[in-house]
Image: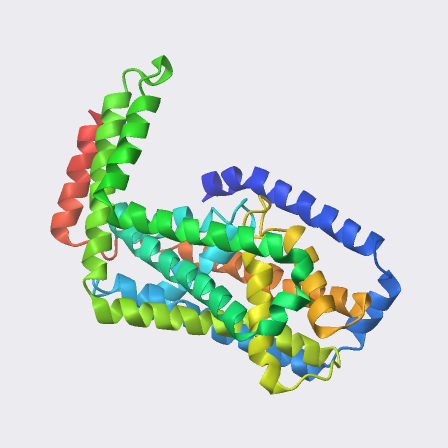
Length: 363
């Protein structure tokens, strides 16, 4: 645990610096007094609804991970899925491009005895489900809500870039899990890299391990995809979770006293989806800086609120969906994951194989 925290220290410092810079920029370009006044006058009951919606999202969001893990580990419980899945918020939140969540989840899976190749297969499909939901929401929103295209004309280029990147990421991750040609291309790239002198001596062993790891990942990926009903429900629950998550700004608008009816909740979901999609390429922790500006501009353009209300809504939204989630995620890691019983899902044969591999590596 100490080693992981030590490795995380630079990322935490970078996260804090970016957060402070974003806060300074936002408050320097807005009336701070008006912003705090709007937040102070917000309706506490609607903010409580926001918290309840966030908790519901956290529970439903991990159902897909639970469904996908069960075929490779029948003893895996929903509590396990909730705890391991919830660590994603913190590790994604402090790393550029939200890249830290999945590697740490592989570590968490491995700690309880589920091999990295199998857990990577699970997490690949889980991430593909998430990306698919984002892409579906974006395209359906553009088709269904004609007014969105005219309201956000000033940020259309950013949105197009964001959608293209999300589609490419979806295809790349699907290719990693499914395509043997993609696997061979990655292997060829690694072979080229380890041909440099700096890797001489260990390169052959590294390449062999990488090849067997990729084969294991694709076997797990394909095996999980063969469970079509599970895959369907994994996508369905991920889609429901995203709808719930992207609906939080609607309740924040209600808390700020904005007259908005429940018939507009899907419109707000579409708008929030765009804010997330168009900032996916921003290389800061949690897309900080870009997503705040995008959210503010979208709310001003589409709902017609004043800048101070838009900034207040953005601060409350980020407070609930980013900082509060990260805090909860970190607590989950410290209290549960770091103290998880090692190898509790590893059977006797796997333990023998694990010991043999470790022994051979030591030799």
